[in-house]
Length: 139
Image (cartoon, rainbow, N blue to C red; front, side, top):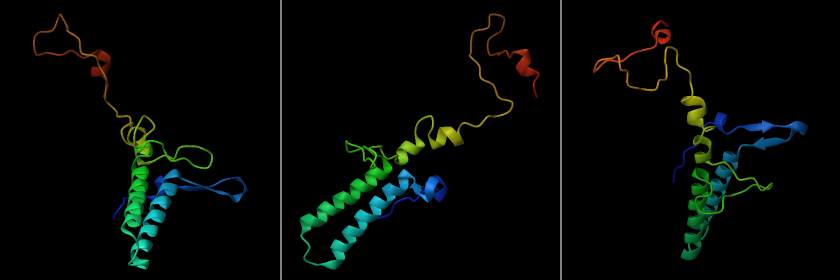
């Protein structure tokens, strides 16, 4: 099984007052995937007589951990930390106004661009458009 791993800059560990470390939510969700997967590997390699139901149950826990990493709350109740805050998953990081795409990638200003509302110009002939002088003179 493979899973995407975000670069460390996108899932930082920050040192706060008193020398304590604060980890990104994504790191905690990765830790959960690794733990569940390690448990499954132990079940499969330690004993050949592990009941099939136990293996299937652990496989389901691995899948739920991966699902939570990708989209927390997809199976109903979202996973929470010790302070009852909902963990932010991949989908939470990239979607919305404060998400990675709109915040940093799509929100860049561009020189010599404008935004207009198209309306009918009674003085213009068919297949013509008019620009305000202020816009036409910049550049």
